[in-house]
Image 1 (cartoon, one colour):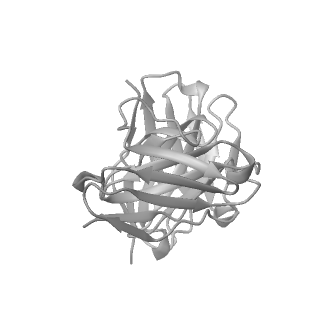
Image 2: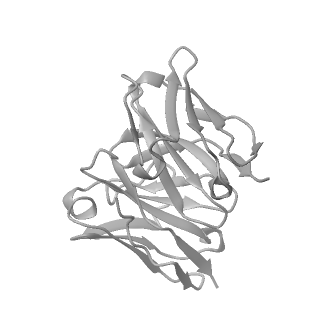
Length: 118
Length: 111
């Protein structure tokens, strides 16, 4: 069965960087794109970016340009999101999710809480 | 990239039906039949409940149905149950390179 397992919760200081992993299983990793979405406490889902599972091409939300990097390791069936220059308003749960068709995000990771606090 | 517009909250009593709207533009909701809906309980990941405007994944109750008219998509939940109390999010395909655009989410309260 398809499954995504994300790395554990992180606590970061302002100005630091975070890196969250998302390990996929149960399907051919390179066949589908992975999107990253975050949700601040009590807030809406916020789209951050995506990576093409086949060719590794990335697209990022303009809001995070310059601070975000999404990568993948096809040998490990794992996607990663890095966010630098963290601020307190980056405190959120970060989700990875698989795109199997336009606007169809069928499986999601369990989420990773990243807390940014001095 | 503007978010899709959803009402912040809706409510209904057990057994009733409710409808949640999701309004976009001709570049997203109105331009394609690629709108999906997700249910999210507190502390959980979103769960896909409707895709391609009105299709349900295997295992999703037929109490959940979707539709679209112009630039507005809608999710209807019939026969409300206590377990339906959750946040509901719409997502649409968009012609921009970002691929998707999200709604602001709607909190459903079952009275």
